[in-house]
Image 1 (cartoon, rainbow, N blue to C red):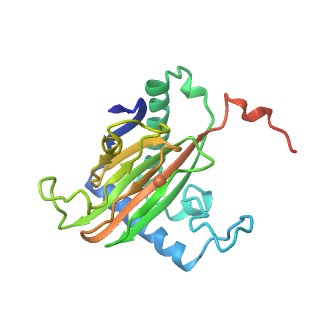
Image 2 (cartoon, rainbow, N blue to C red):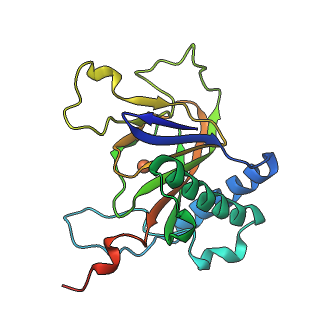
Length: 221
Ligand SMILES: [Fe+2]
């Protein structure tokens, strides 16, 4: 399903993976999160005060393929098919099969109390998230206090100076294991604090169309 939030196409659907596949994806993601902690990525960044990127890696790199479960490759094909379908339906791109698409995948693994502050994703066109674990003992929609939250994805209205009534311009997406969300990378978004027990674990894929645009015209400066 694609909702045109503020005329911005945001896809939400349930991933086509069974319980065992979801368990395999979660186990692999946790394994990679642990690997990331013990093998900090080498950052290739300009020097900007004390800033550094914490996620300078790509789980789709061939170096990670050796120990990946079977569902990992199915997940990758699912992302490709879903993104091409999104471009076709939302943006009326008829020849999506011809597009050269590049992607980067990172894992997120958060304990109770953590949130993701507002951000957008640079160097890509769209972002797809697959939620694998959203914790236990969670409040339902009737008991959830919106101002406290419980790990909902909050999408900001991308229009500058969005008008009255401004408090209705953010969109809250309740996350569950298996939920997939695909949205334009430049939409500012954040995650409410995760207040339940357990962990919140997800895979994030940033996507870029690398052909059929002006990219081929660029030369070294
Ligand atoms: Fe994000």
